Length: 247
Image 1 (cartoon, helix red, strand yellow):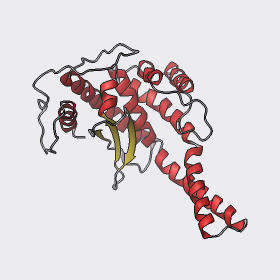
Image 2 (cartoon, rainbow, N blue to C red):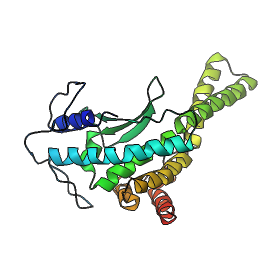
Image 3 (cartoon, rainbow, N blue to C red):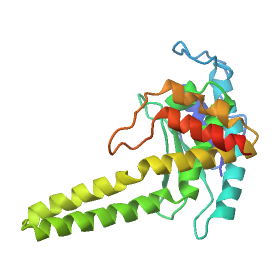
Image 4 (tube, one colour):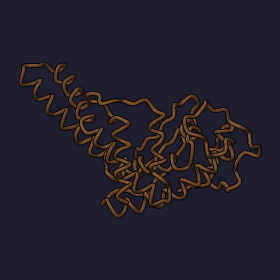
């Protein structure tokens, strides 16, 4: 994991500069000036210094502590998965606060943060919990399971369309619908699984996952929507509390 490279990307992006990939970036590659960053009125007080340097250093501190724990949990819990997490920052302007997990063509797990999420984090516990949650998605192989379920949904819906006399176009439409429904069927369960394992990872890295889960109170509550991808915020907080109580 190229920690200092990540630090440089975060720092320069926060400063509004263009980032050029460099093979060897020193740990002092941060903005020279502590320029204050404007933020909206928070619901939770900010504990991270509201400067480019402060935000960048807080982020990289969390990455350095959480990544080794996530990697260890991955190797202990999974077989055949690449556990060498790559942490990246999406520095495109005007991106909403978000983080996600994916894999590259070699199967290496990637955890991506947008700058908006990094800036919005009130404390290191929130950054740690988000990172641990995304790492948990990979450890539980949720992407692989989603692909399998989507494929099964496409096959079933396609067969139903064929049995009922549908033509090629109708079958293709049914397959697309089946894949979409299949991919969403277990999405809420996957999120709760990631919340539980993320709680364990964050705690073992020395952070407070209960405090980290406070960010749920600052995002829209999806409620219990049919085929929704995320469970209600209250249910997610409860999963964190129950898991943390058992540690």
